[in-house]
Structure formats: structure tokens, C-alpha cells
Image 1 (cartoon, rainbow, N blue to C red):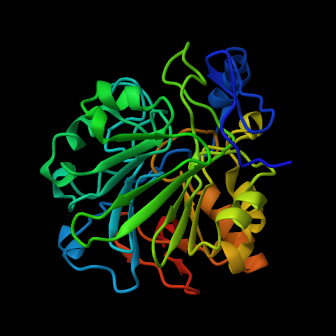
Image 2: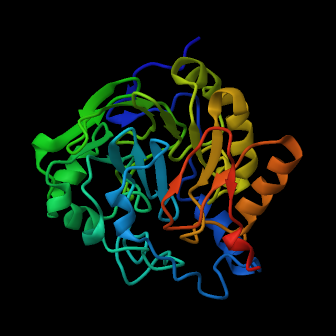
Length: 346
């Protein structure tokens, strides 16, 4: 059996690569009592940061050929072999339909969108509010630094982008296993971006779940490969993805917003460690970068719990973690873990 195939649909709704239970309205009655009784520090008691990104750093290409700036959660700027890829950018105050209610960000953006360098690709994995923000997209679509950018996303999400001001001609929507190749404006390099299956869901309202696709992505340049796992529960497809598209220099996997009630769609830190092993471990998955944490309160766990759990397991199992300070452009070098415990408060 192969998991690497195009997404299937039932009616107008996309299906997960394996049977998956996504909580419906009844889940609210299970979750609400837990929220009311929750005593974990799900939001930092002491404000985080401020963190700052020096945009002048982007004037010089990374010596290693691979540099990543993590802006918190799953928002990143990946500079790979001369191509700049802005991933799931969220500059909104809240990950919510409105900006006066909902999960509020833990720290301010580390730079203004207007300070970004020239961007070649803007990659949007799926349409949830913590990955696709209307105000962010509207601003990006009007900047000179993104005027030539290619917008790459999952099937159906293009309608969201067009609604927020992105020209249709600049959008590439990918089904699972489909690829697109894009070139860099400044350095003349090329990058192949491939969508691969993940175990999650989509939707921005009560009635549009599963009507657009979600996915993980492989970024393949002339010298480096990066796996961006986006949002996913643990499942058996990671091994095949690693065998088909690896080896990777850097593997990005989600660790936050997890709970047993929704473990099929969010893997958490232990699931990330397991998925990393399935992808090939240090030999084929490279360095493990934890994402999808430290910016929004989207679950019941303490905000530090995901990274503390993963760090402890990594120490026991010799997993090479790569986790920089938010907003700090950091070079990725083969075999050199990066773990700056900025979150520890020490």
C-alpha cells in the first residue's frame, strides 16, 4: 500500500490519507469543563520578548546555503540555496476570525512585514486561522518585496488568497504528490516544492470543513532539502515520505496544541519524535526543528510543556534538535544541533 497518492474526496470534502476522527460540536462539551478547571500556565505569566529581527542580515546570503528565521508558531522564513520562502506567515494579533476575541499572540512580531527582504515564494499549508491571516495576506500582496513572489498552497486555498488580494496568476495550488518549480529573483536558483499528505483538516467556519486541502511540503534545492510537516497527527505515512523524498537537512514537525482528544490531528512532542524516527532519524531526517508552539494558546497544556517534553526525550534518544531564538536568522549546518533555551526563563 502506498500513501503517496493524490487526495481523495467524498462529495465536495477531502479525505485524510487514513481514517481520522475530527471532533465535532459535541467535543465542545468535553473540552469546556477542562478549560474551566485547567491550572496549567497555558499563556506566559511574564510577557515574552521583545524579540527582534535585524533585516540587514538578509543582505548577505547564508554561508551554509540554508538559513531559517522562526517567527513563532509555524511562521518561518526559509532561505534555501538562493531562494527565500516565507511559510505560513501570521502577523495578526489573534489567531481568530476577528481581532478582538480569540487566542492572542504571546509576543509581538519580530519585524514589520514591510521590513522583509525580497521574497520568492509564499507558502501557505492550509487555511486555518493560525496559518492564514487575512490582514497578513492583504499586506503581503501589496508590498514591493513580494511583487514577484509565487504563492504556493494546497488545493482550494487559492480562493482564500484571491479574496484577500493575491492575483490568480501568481497562485499555484498543489494536490498531494504534485510539485511546482520556482526560480529565485535575485540569485537565479531554482526550488522544487512538493505537497505530500498529512493527517489534519481544513476550514475557517462551521460549514466549510474539509472543502479545501491541507498538506506538508518538501522543499528541494540544488544543495539542500527541507521537510515542512505543517499540521498533522501521527500516522504511518512518514516512513514512506522519508524514503521517497529524503534525505533532509532539516525536518520541521509540530509539537504544540496537542491533547488526547485531538491526537489524530495534532501529534504533540512525543508524536513528533516518533515521526522523526519514521522519517529516517538523524541519518535521513537531519536536524529536528520543533514548530507550531510558543505563540498562541490553542490547547490546555502549559505553553512550555511541548518543548520541555521534546527536549527531555531528545536527550534520552540522541535526537539532534534545532531550535533557535524567535526572530533570529540562524544558519543550518549539517550535524550541528542548535538549542537555545530562551523559553526556560533562565
